Length: 348
Image (cartoon, rainbow, N blue to C red):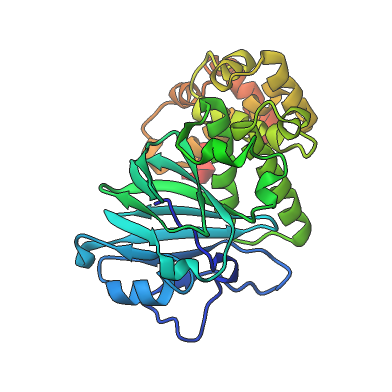
């Protein structure tokens, strides 16, 4: 779900009064020097009023209403970085409100809302409308506002201090006071980077938190202010890091495709073949070597998997995108020091 404008999210730490019904996972790190993403969730058995009173109002700074409280579900994954807090969320039909009473908490921050799936109906002052998947909108925390999810919604919210939000990330604050489309390539890079950050369980050191924060600001500028200095200069390497990650994901998704190439990956990501090769080389490995190693790794996994024991080795090679069985045997032995049939025999 989207729309956690969370006046108190920067102070969202477990409290002694939080019961098991409002579960929090991984909020406290063994080392206070680590930034650790944490999860808030309630499932179908949760007490809805407890969720509102214990977490939504005091911790996230928003109220929630649901047409069927007994069936309401909400899942939040939160990461606080130095200048931005990231909240990935899913929810069943509900209304999220930043009420006049909650606005009195004095939070003057900004929240950018990006639905990934589903539609939200918004109201800010006398403005109202629909926020669709693939669009973005900025909500001020010092004004009453509301978001209505009539169906299930999945997306992300990014909370900034007002000054941080003006550091070249957005062309002008009013540009996002109404829903605006986000370019597909920029949206994919941003979503991929956010997902990787939120999936981290072991925590980020202060130095890595600073790097992630700067990367994220650069990616947001690329999405919302692409002609601004921050996006054009890309001084922090955030766009390169996200594109490299996207390349790796495209390779993983296309390993079985014999036509997989730097050119085909570049076309899907909107960059040139040479740029794909340069990014991989900058990471210390050529595109062709990386693909070959991933295919061989995949083949070894399949050879050791009992559910694929009925397949011939030539078929395993094909599933991994390695059609020439003689070449496959040579490369497999070179990488792992044994023949494919021996790897299968030892693994099963």
